[in-house]
Length: 202
Image 1 (tube, rainbow, N blue to C red):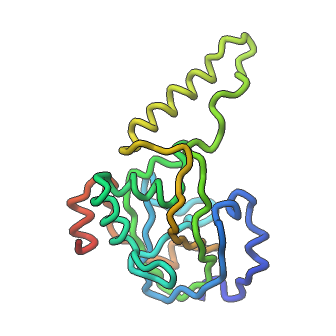
Image 2 (cartoon, rainbow, N blue to C red):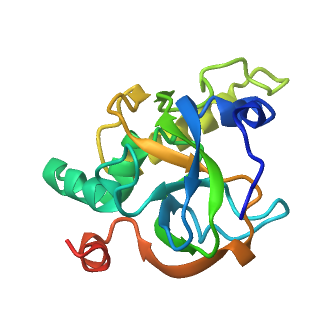
C-alpha cells in the first residue's frame, strides 16, 4: 500500500502551491492496476523527490465519469487536440508546462491519494507586465517575457481564455510515488489525435 496512513490532515502539510491546485478534495483509495495519465513535457520521469504526484484516471473513476477517453472526445468535438483540452480542463498555466506528451502508467500497488477537482487558474501564473528587473530601465526582461508568453499562447492550439477551467474535472495527487510503484506505458505526442484514438480505443 502506498501512503497507508494518509489522512485529510496531511493535505494541509503540502506546499501551498499544491493545495491551491484543488478546488475541493477528499482522501480515496486507488486500486492496484489503475491506469493513470497526464499530459506533460517529457516523460514524467522520476526526479529528486520521486515521480510527479499529479495524475488523472484513464478510465472512469469515482466522480470522474469520462476519463481520458472523455477528454479525447471533448477535444475532437471542439476541434482541438488533446493537449489543448487538457490544458483548459486541468487548469495548466501556459508558463507551467508545454503539455507535449500523453504519458500513461499503471499502479503496481493500492494507494491512498487526494482526489478532487481542479482549481481554476489564470492562463499565465505570473503577471508578465510587472516591474522590470533591468537596472537600466530598458524593459528588456518584461518584453522578453511578453514575447515568450505570446509564443506559448500561439502554440497552445486554441484561443486561451484569461481563466482556465470552469467545467468540473477531477485529479489525483499521490504523494511519495516512485518508479517502483508504477508500470510505464507508451508516450504519445499530445497533438497526435490518430495515435491517441488508437491507444484509447476511440
